[in-house]
Picture (cartoon, helix red, strand yellow):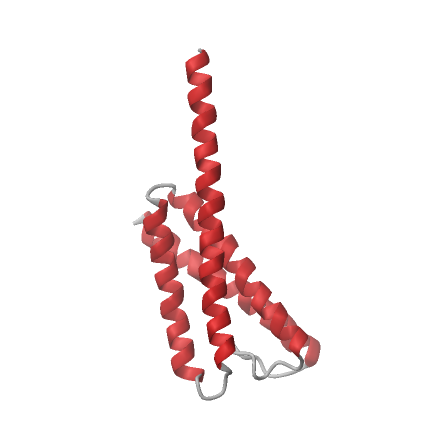
Length: 140
């Protein structure tokens, strides 16, 4: 039961971080809040900020999911990627007429990059810790 809840909470965290960036833009420019897309943003700078928040929030929440689950990290990274891609599939279905194609491609690519980077960092850190543990147990 821990694994599905972790995936769900990781997904909610991802939505929170990206939504928080959108909320800041909404209050700063006094525009209508949009949960996804970039067509309503006031300038190109904010597009880059949204894209950066997608990468950072994906990396951060994937690291949290992998840390909490701590077993079969490849499988759980792929499951988390599938959850995110399903969410983006709904976004594309709801906004493909108003949003540019590069946004959809960029967001999906940044999600996959964030998950891959988190997987690399976590797996290398984990293998490094296992090596240190093995060295210390051999010295004893």
